[in-house]
Amino acid sequence: MTMTIPSLDPQSLIVILTGAGISKESGLDTFRCAGGIWAQYDLEDVATPQGFLRNPQLVHGFYNGRRAGLLDKEIQPNAAHKALAHLEQAWPGGVLLVTQNIDDLHERGGSQNIIHMHGELLKIRCEHCHTITEWREDLGLETVCGACQRKGGMRPHVVWFGEMPLQMAEIGEALQKCGLFLSIGTSGHVYPAAGFVSDVQQRGHGHCIEMNLEPTAGQSLFDDHIYGLASEVVPDFVQKLLATLPQACA
Ligand code: APR
Image (tube, rainbow, N blue to C red; front, side, top):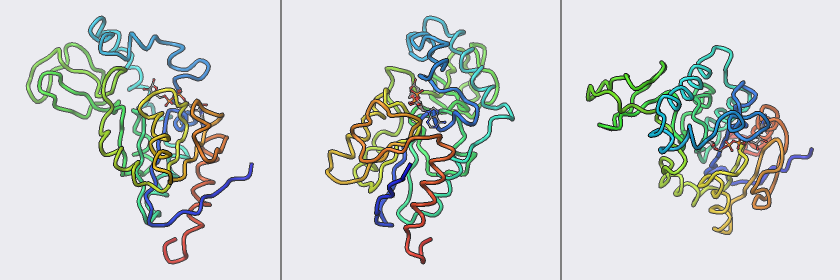
């Protein structure tokens, strides 16, 4: 496939939205692919505040399993995560990585300017005192908050359906000024992330590219489409984009 590389002012900000597809080749399941997470579990049971109220043990079990899976030594960042870290380090105008993923593979791949809009699997939060704590163990009703010493109020620091995603003001500001918006490995079914491309397009400038295994729900809103495995198309795109920089910047 021929890849169109936009001509972009090196001083313009790049905003990148990632979804479960970027971590698929690292060994983590996506949500909506055949046999994905929502084929195995009912999201109303495990990813809503109501589900947590009804059956907290079930919800803790779901996230305990995913947390243990993420910490398996086989699960490592892939070439796509690493390429985005390289882009962040090399692009003069800056890169903001907004991920819907709750895994830490972008951090382990070397990215630093990251917003986890759907929270983080390796953090927990106390519903009594709101303290957020890094956490790599199982979590349960007996877990005591290290800050307020109360138990029964600890929950995964993740955003459930019906809750407000995190750092939306910062994301909105970046979408208003970016020169390039990339959407990688997300099916475009979940808002507000699925609406970011429209936010950029409504400004009348800002180039939008979708990179995914297949066309997504919002494909018609993008200026360009690059279909293929993230571990292949993302490094290729990053290399070609960086090659457009004047020699002094590259
Ligand atoms: N490379 C590129 N894209 C891939 C790859 C791959 N190796 N494997 C799968 N994909 C694509 C799929 O084709 C699909 O379009 O990744 C996309 C993953 O889509 P979803 O499973 O819907 O995941 P995502 O878009 O991240 O879901 C959004 O939904 O349930 C919630 O909170 C959860 O953050 C998640 C949100």
